[in-house]
Picture 1 (cartoon, rainbow, N blue to C red):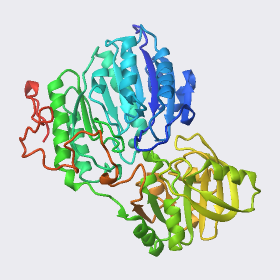
Picture 2: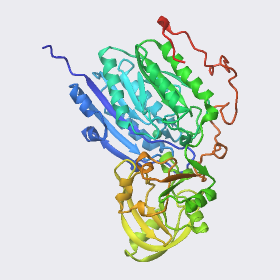
Picture 3: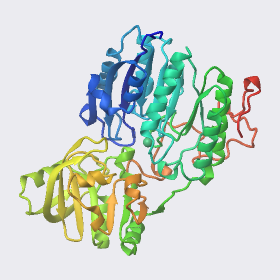
Picture 4: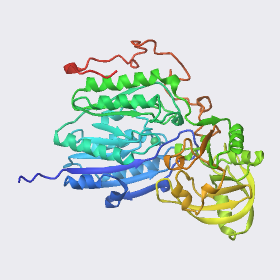
Length: 502
Ligand SMILES: [Zn+2]
């Protein structure tokens, strides 16, 4: 047997879905962090790499709850620590697990900056493969700094591990074939809120199937649909399509453009996929609901979309409307949480909650008995810090010291809270994560204000590209319409008679 030299592969992960509409910066302390070999258990690719006998060079893993822009100095610290761990020479490939919509104070795209720094160090002869989130807002330069791009193909996300593994498999394929492919990107000038885009439902379902069909073309490595994260005010915000072919860039570009065109054509068909209503109407609908368990999403303050999570707006409405048998899960308020830790369990407390992080968030006063205290599990499966639960009679309220996301049953379990015993459960989410959706008899989206508000006219985006639907419409006329320069969806002729699926 001829013994092959093991492939030397560096791995790294940096994830935080950004939201540039919140005033709260994401700091180093907000990241679940591991470096060196400690990062192995955080990624889903180690068995794959070990199975191939690879010599793995770990860098770091940093994953934060979606939030405001990462503080510049904190991001630079993370990026430089990652780059520092890469050997200048001798690497066969690099695999990175990146969100794609991580924004950085004064810098913009974290991913572009990081990749540019990596290229400065290792050059352009080392293949780089990316596994990204479906909500990546990829900048124009990003595909020029890597060799293959793949990502999640489900929203809500159920395939995080598959996407990581696919990224590694594609990297190994490039290394073995001595390939340095050039991913091609196209955009649809459409802003669609994340909550109106689910991959199992039309119109996105058909678009995902089209991408899948394109991926079966000979030599095509990956055809990836990204919806983008709409709450980032940058010129590169919005749906983008990245296709990577082993060598046929024209075919890849034609496929990316075909998908962009199809997305644009479907722009009027995206709508909220659950019941959506004004906040007061949503509260009334929930109160009148006959279903035993109704989830009410405080969609404007959705921490999984990066919003602040400190707004008591919906709690106040529930109080005003006289809601009964309701749980508010939860509100970030360090001061109120601290007051609960200073009191005794079972004690009755009157607290002002809300508005502790953002001047735009509202506060309200609650009086209740302290029924639980303890650390709460985070979105990233680590510790999100202290929490307190107050039974205020008709409404039970969870207060957390830090921003949190009560998006899965195990997070409720971590503070001994059985959400199933309430009629209304108000959560700081948009659409429910699959683990909660399974439990809900009904889900209502309350169109509340905040940094993740669902109404584009309330977002006050200033830096996005224009024209942009729905702010502008019908700016690409007819199926052949070239539009402005650089925006046309005209296809370049693919080589070797390859057909672009239509
Ligand atoms: Zn996402």
